[in-house]
Image (cartoon, rainbow, N blue to C red; front, top):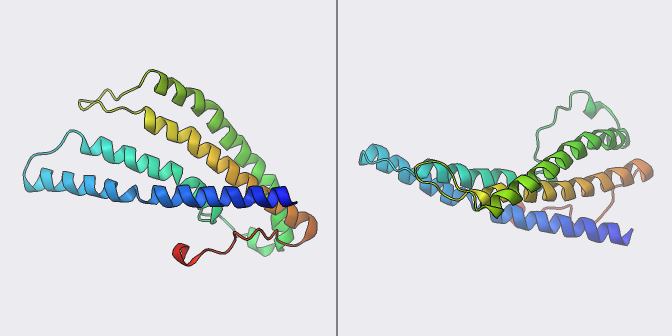
Length: 181
């Protein structure tokens, strides 16, 4: 059990760290968009790079934040019937739904890794007028899928423990700190 708790704490800490770092991508995205709006509407001089840059920054922000969102239960759930069951029954139901999660994330990782690697290998760039490199954005997809897969494993372990014992697996990383609230 000690290894599982160490694994869960490591994955939780890793995804907290990545999530907090990626949260700061919203600032350069915002600056690029504000710059574009000011240039376009204030000076009638639109840029050729702002839209593509903001899309890439937001794309990285979005996909890399997924594991953090999963860690803190920030995804939207449809729980009309689910909430009527006992916590233990919900844990058992979650164990079945995790199979869909693993099928999706596994497929995403399996298909995106070679795609991203090929992009890196050829130093792929955009065909737009500006033509920035896009390989670094493509690398975020398998990286994010891997982080989400790890976080899903921690949730599965916790659900399995709860389904078997009827008690939550206490790892020391459940309660958000002051900075996360």
